Image (cartoon, rainbow, N blue to C red; front, side, top):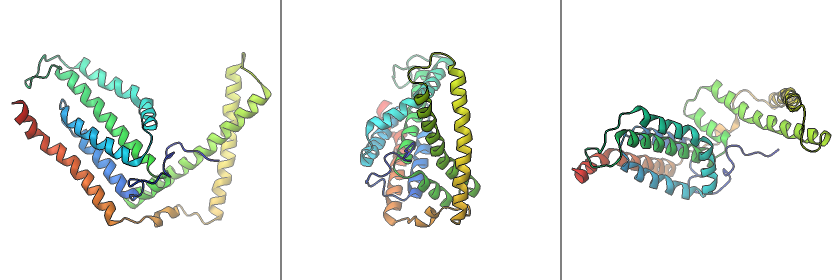
Length: 258
């Protein structure tokens, strides 16, 4: 049973992969907060944000096609939100700084870029380490214990559900070769019922096995985390770089366009 829904490239060796999960979590969420707090209509800072995120992506050695594929899965929601805003905002013609875009379109582009960069940062966060190590990092950062246990168990049991899906699909194909022409709803409904029944049985066996090995609600990964000085320095430099773009761009823009 080998699956990789979130952490397909977590085994790569890169400077980002070697950073402690706590540092990566703080860096990712701080970057998202800084980017999202950018005022509406300011487009130039996103060019700097994009270059920084592109450099981080290159350092992780994660294939760009993988990141693009993940972004395309969520892009319809981002595009709808970005397109809806200009339709609800009044057209302002040429802005005071000489832009040819209306205020609504500029704000829509800002929304799109904010969501896109936040999505890429989350993809990089989940792809540069095992999911259970991220949960261990969150627990070290005072995440509620019950929420951490539920998330860890859900992630483990997703694999069981997927395995049962593969088994029932293989059994169905062996009994009904070719394309199902009639009774599709009934066939797939029966398959779904079998999947959930078998998954419940297997999940109970897995949980009993965990209890027999001394599971008390805490996972051993928490004790293996080691926050190094270089992790703190790299995280601080990354956040400081984004803060510099966020805070220093306003006077630069006024000097350039006024």
